[in-house]
Image 1 (cartoon, rainbow, N blue to C red):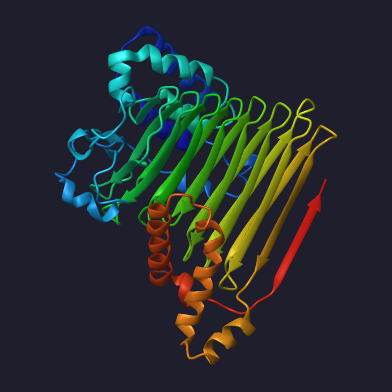
Image 2: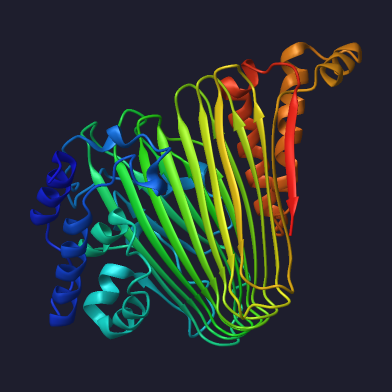
Length: 453
């Protein structure tokens, strides 16, 4: 057993978790046994080949249940809207009702902390945990999180109900500079013909803290359901973040994901989707910004199980200093999934000679009547375009900032909600201005490949 594995097992043993049902104790024990068998991964495992696994070789502990005294005004700078839309707030991995407001939700919508739901009506949680059994078999960290299942978001939307305003799930890391481990589990069930926009947002109030934020999100879409999901990570420079989301889609459902990784020392977001019934569609958009020695990763797995399904993935990497980005996408079109479509595209802008990107878009096509294509590009800023902007009276820094900001617009432009789009665009411009991304831009070379099946 590796030291890293022992550190996490020790943290798990010292904790007290909500819910005391026999099935829950058995579930946790089963997940812990599976984790113990696999252990914390190293770079010899293909899925973790590009990740800095040495960052996990230190003792961790779960944070105290008490947190710093926060008031709603402390949250205002982080909210996408000041108009009092649905908000569920977690601090150091635990639900904070005094910082949440849920009164504006339609009748019939169940929104709760997962910890409370386990204690009040654990059978509802049990059903979906059992249906997801086996989906995390190859992810030791996900198994560990389930062994320590404690809190997160529980959201269930009845059939036909549409939530007009985005639901903001805000997680704040506060407190000491000790190495804490903050696991969370989010469960979202969208009934047939329902509609939801969910903003899953992670921020750090103490930039010197060094937590490991770990999340599992399960999203279930009924027939004809429409879910727009926005994942935003803008944590402190010492934060490590592991996120694993699984999405199960029924007939004619539509899932749209926007992933923005803007902070942290190391952030890895894994997105697994199963298009299980005909007419299911998913669109996946993402942006990683990394400077200094930070690293951001996006891993995508899409399974087309049946005919007439479609998936598309468009991801941008914006890398400066010694920043590194990783994009791995695996799309499998199974033998029965005829008349399906799959598109992948990854574009990366390197703003310094020491920035790095690993891009691996992959298609595994086992059907013969499909439309698929994938491509990747790596480039630098266009010197001629930069000189043109300078000739129009812009200073060098302003010209670079304008060009870098323009690179993000292909992703920002796909956000359907106007206020969310404006909010994200403002955040990106602030980050570009603040970071080395603006100060370390260089001239252009472009390398690209495109393959079609």
